[in-house]
Length: 373
Image (cartoon, rainbow, N blue to C red; front, side, top):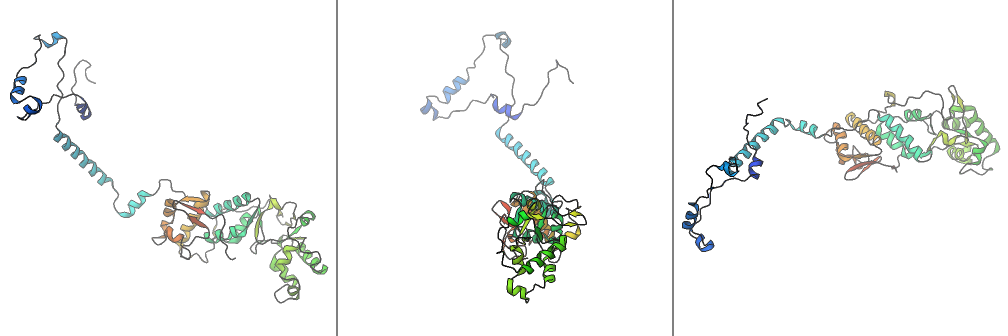
């Protein structure tokens, strides 16, 4: 800390020099100024030789302090200084710039890139959200394309959802249920009461009741001998149609149902863990394990992991994603896996059955394209 009374000298910043008055040399007028202004070189010289002086010998006596002399920087000096500063900045930027094209791409990656830690759990959450939004029922075609695209086993998805969802699917433990008396009255499209012979009807209902929580379509067809060449098939048609139309039977292989919606409509059977209805006590694994993966058609494992991550993040983000983020998510699959090829129907990377995009965002399909089982 210096003395408080001792004057200090410091450099005046450039902006202060530009905004404070400076003493400039008087301009020299040429001979033509006489014609324009009435002042020529001799008049200028005469005026210049008559200095303005104070009546007092001491400037302080007049009560005026002589102005402090301010250094003057020429335009050339300022330009030179600006050029030096610019060179220094360019040098610093060149030293900090990443070396190599791959590093440059990493620098462009968003600071907070979304990530799906468990795409299987994200899939389960999405299906449950759809069911709740749809009032408890959901077409299977909304789910099957997504499961297939993410490379998960249908059995694993059904088991993980079985505590809250009933799905009449061949991979499920139970496909067929008996209706309650109230549920029979609520049948949306029942067959005529005289459509089946009473003996055939009783056999159907009896076998379903005996199988209980293990009632399967294929097993029932085998017990009844109901096949493509059987007399039952020629007389009554496909067993699938008959089961769907019986008052006493609940069978709908085209939809997923929240079990709460079926409460009071069906008579839930009992297995070793208890009643299989809603809020059962069975411990269900609802996170990813190796048993969830269906690697039969996985193909390129890098693309398999990249598309699973892409779909997981899209579901995690509520069904939409920024296009630039989507590009970064599929980068690990290699140069050929571009976002354009992801939306090219028939390509190796085609995901158009579950996604669509606009110029700035990628969206999950709410009305999925139909696929075969």
